[in-house]
Image 1 (cartoon, rainbow, N blue to C red):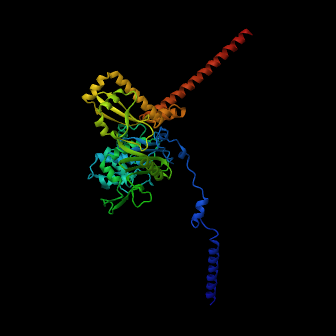
Image 2 (image 1 turned 120 degrees about the horizontal axis):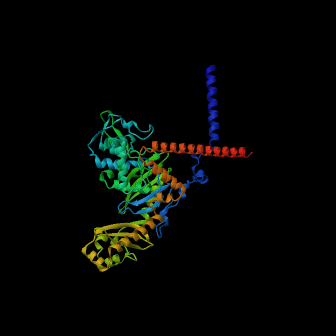
Image 3 (image 1 turned 90 degrees about the vertical axis):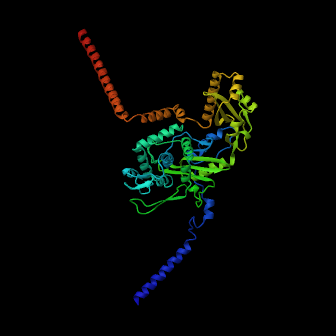
Length: 501
């Protein structure tokens, strides 16, 4: 009976406590309970300093003004022509993280048939323990197809390294081929150290270079098919007796994702603590195919990419040159004559450019005869180079050039003037080589010196130690000689004083 009374008292006490709690809770409402109030009282999180950094493309006269983005560097490029629509720090070096795998996958797809069986070695264990992987074990075998999907969809670091070793014999040999391809594509500020993008201080690229690499990879139909796939199932292997489900990490291509973007064709994500979020995305609308790259972003990489695509698709259009209001540059007498005679109709019909929907500046072209009787035509919006096309000069074109007395020297001078004009434009809008600009400052000079030292062969370290040791030995020897010399002089003076006394 006593026990029942105690339980009854406990029950009553618990009810009282719950009753008091329910009365107190409304007064202590959490933000989740009072969303409407908190939305009006809480301030929006402060934007990082990079949000206010300069946007070079906004300096182009008559160019649509692009949005501010959190990413430290960003670019929006037309895939087909290579025209740059938006530029923010596009030649500044940044860590690419897993967007490195675009180059890795491109080379692998080009060199290895999809049905090839790849047996992985101990190389799969040479990654950081907490980095992205799909659990491949040494001795396990996948097809090249399974490996390509693992690299691009699941961002598997161990698969990237394993495929690199399979193709190159060593990972370093494959990485060397990555760097060579980057150079072949015209990338001036890119250097890879590994095939997966795990952070290393000497592993870097720029928004411009990564966009160029991404455009090259996009030309491969197999690559395009993989990056737009929502998921892929890897069948059981010789070691793992269960299937692996690989989901596409890029949310903008997934229709059921809150980040989905209409027209998205896929891309590649990347993240490390030091690199931040990196993102490469392809999208197509109204006949325009664009690639967007954001590097060193915080958690706004999807919002930044969305804003840049909206900017591109809303403010630009793709036009055939023959339907645009085009005229020859002021000093281009050859181009003016060819335009007047209709000799450029065929090349204009086959050339398209991305232009502002509401152009405020003139669209002009500069023509020049190159070696091998090629006619190079460079298209400009005001002073900004948009693109170029080259054709074999016909007899009609050569006849006009001869009639105008355009000599080889004059063509050369015209070409140099055009290059100077391009250089000035690219310096003002989308600098071609930030390294040379940085070298003008003491800090830039030191950075360039360090970078060049890192590029030297491995014997640089013992050589440096020898030079430093020799320098120290020389300084010590010189110091001792000076001291001895002073001591001898002092002794001589003392002797002279003794004799005189």
